[in-house]
Length: 172
Image (cartoon, rainbow, N blue to C red; front, side):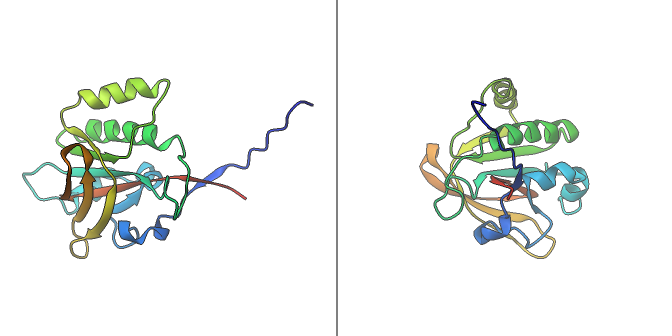
């Protein structure tokens, strides 16, 4: 035998360990894995103001590439977020999506997905990390504080749903 592969599997990083991102304070801050299981439209529209477009934000590298949590890149979060952004836009054409990222690490077929995301005028890619998030009031919308590196400023936005793209932790 010239090599052995031990495949332990993985689980998502526990977003409760990143309290500044507000996970667990309301149903409008979810992880990328939870988003796959949700009836997205119901969550967003339950508190969405009539006549305006729902806004969904993604916080990339939630806990990843951070010496206080996971020092590594999990390598699949970017591609997953891009896919989920397109899925949201398809399910809710009136929606707008904002993706806060450190850098987008995509390869292979995900390069095509990135091209589709970049072509959608209602998906905004914002280079910068989310510093904090909080529910404005019980059951309310989410206030997100982040950096916008390309415009050299900090920004605050209010969104209907914040998705935390958490990293992967090896199963033990």
